[in-house]
Structures are given as C-alpha cells and as structure tokens.
Image (cartoon, rainbow, N blue to C red; front, side, top):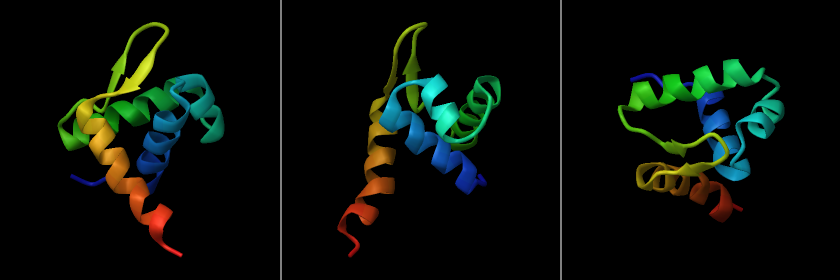
Amino acid sequence: MNISSRQLDAFIALAQLSSFTLAAQRCHLSQPAFSALIKGLEDGVGVRLFDRSTRHVALTQEGAVSYTHLTLPTIYSV
C-alpha cells in the first residue's frame, strides 16, 4: 500500500470541506480527477473513508479516525 502526499492532501481537503467540488478546487484538480484520486486512496487502504450521496459527503468512522491521526500531530507540534 503506497499512499502519496497528493492523496493525503486530497483526503484532508475533502474531510475539511465536505464537498468534492471545493476540495478539487483547493487541490487544483478537476472534479473527476479528484474523485479518482480519492477512490484510489480508498482502494489502496482497503476501507471506505467517505459516505457519499448526490448532495452529501461525510467521513465514515474509519475516515474520522484516519483524519484525527493525520491532523493531530500538526495541531500539537509547535
């Protein structure tokens, strides 16, 4: 399982913005390319990180744990 920094940036952007369109813009990607990046990340880690519907995106329990582990070190490092 190789996870790129680009995938991690995309994951964090989507977790924070809860919008594929806005997160794709933040990452300077088209929405289809961004979606493929997130799908590749989920396939790589073997779990679904986001629950999706046509109008809603939310972290799954696994996604929330991952987000916490990825962002806590940056919050507490001074």
